[in-house]
Image (cartoon, rainbow over all chains, first blue to last red; front, side, top):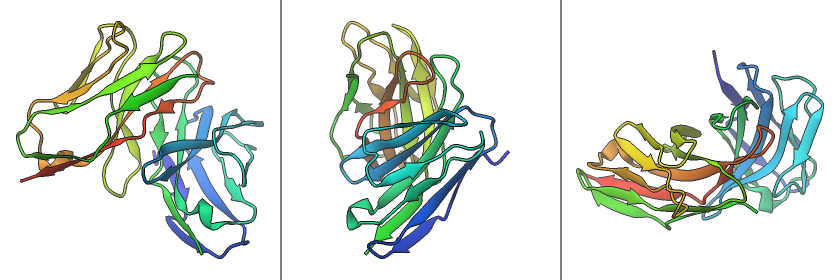
Length: 114
Length: 113
């Protein structure tokens, strides 16, 4: 049971490049989400999904796209990278039933945009 | 909307000192409350949780009590260790499983020997 996995661990992009951050979970969780973590800002929700084929925007969705074609995978796409997207990105998953459901986080991807 | 406010850091303590990290929340309903911990270079992991008023969550010597009357969920530990150095996040969850968690901004704790 690998939990939540993210690739790559580190990435450097040039302004305007595109890339996809990968996230996968093997716990059969319906709910998956992407956060970015910046100094002094805590965690900010980018996009989330409550099941395959269903996605919704979070607090800071601009510049990012997501899709959920399977229960296991929830990739985050940067269409045209900007220096403001330099951050650490975390993927998380949880079941959707129950009030006290635990979110499981991946180890993060550290992205630098030059 | 819902929100979580936790004390600003960083907090620096000597080993074996008492720790309190304050957390208050605003919610329209009756949320569940959580503390997550992030060790250096890692993702967040659940530390403890409480789902109803007066519940006490506890784990690894940490405790927090759900206080509905003061809308608070303060984290405490009687004797911190160097290994407790991390960033601590208070969070709430309200309603159904389709509702995202709401996080505070995190409090960095450094424990020195």
